[in-house]
Amino acid sequence: MTDLEQYIQKTPLMDTHEHTAKEDVYVNDGPDVLSDLFDNYTQMDLIVAGATPDAVQHLINSHDPDIEARWVGVSQAWQHCQYTGFGQATRLIAKQAYGMDEITLPAIDAAGKKNKEFRQPGERLRILKEIGNLDHVQIDDGIWACYPDSSGPDFFLYDLQWAHLSSGMIDLGALQKETGIEIVNIKSMRQALEKLFALYGQIAVAVKSQYAYNRILLWHERTDMEAEQVLMGMIKGEVISEEGKLCIGDWCLSRGIELAIEYNLPFKIHTGYIYGYSVMFTERISSGHLCGLLQHYPKARFVLMHIAYPYYHELVGMAKHFPNVYVDMCWSWSIDPLGAADFLRHIIHAVPSNKLFVFGGDTHWPNQSAAYATQARSWLTRALQAEIDEGLLGEAEAISLATLFMRKNQEACFNLDKKRAAIRRAYTQQK
Image (cartoon, rainbow, N blue to C red):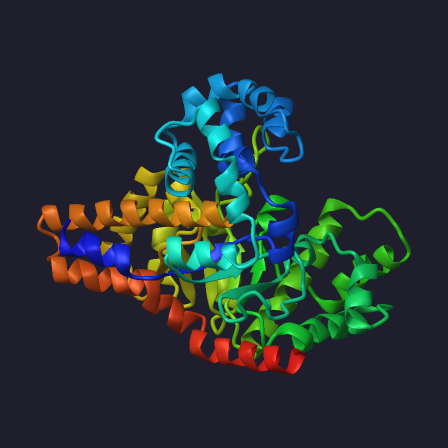
């Protein structure tokens, strides 16, 4: 094992993007073996490989004890997708968590006891910290509230969710309930958004929006008057046009970024590849659509996620051009490992080295995150070793870059020492 490989293996990774389920959900309603292996992005590859959606849903249904029936419906499709990035991640879960050299029905049955051992209080944290060797995880759990997590207050850090607001798909009742502010016009709407930050801005690690799932990434500046016209229709219960959703979504996105600047929080934006199958609008997802937004808010720290796959060369250019852009490789090592390695090598030679974060698993369960971290370490090593082998970097230089990409850049961008201190204070007061 080279010094580089040893260093990457032993260095704790900053995990900047997960959807990790809470402790009580994991313990009481978490995954059985099949769900642990396949209730992640591999299920999409299974469908693309020929499995039916019903068979895949049956596969990941932890409440069904008929393991054989669940497995038979996808076993042939699995043979076709086991070598994809998602498939590799599943094979790593099988080996790392359950000791499986091959996923077979007898091996799945034998792993049941181990699965029950995993689903105990405290195991979620142990798996992520000890097996995954993660410094912490940043979690988007789809809600505004970012209260300290009692199962690991300064390990499980939470994003303030902004996706539905910036998509124009706004639940006014939920927003009023969360903030205690009655929304009657655009002024009170602004006050409600400000209240979200007053409640959670000090303890959120970032603001996060994946609005590309519902609309184009392209943003336009909107006036209060324009947004209020749409808002009043929402209040009256009218059906809002797509253009109306874009208008109020752009307005809310602007307010979220302005508040993120005020609260010194990075703003994460999903770019590129969309989760799912058979429905992807490639014209929505290119990171180049964000140029106007980046120019308009030079004081914001934008974290552009998932390497904008498959448009990653465009993102290299944006990270090179904009001082306020950081690039997060979360999810990319499992989408296309070779593409991610190529992206990282382009970043090294085109972009200042303080702009890249190398890992986020983007999963729900701890064994999955730990395996995705193993996958990322392996491919990061390959990419940096190729730089050494081609005489472009010395080993000491590659290790220095690994330190930045795995830890130091995240520490600086997310102000992690101060953020963790704030969360610890909030947790003490909460108790």
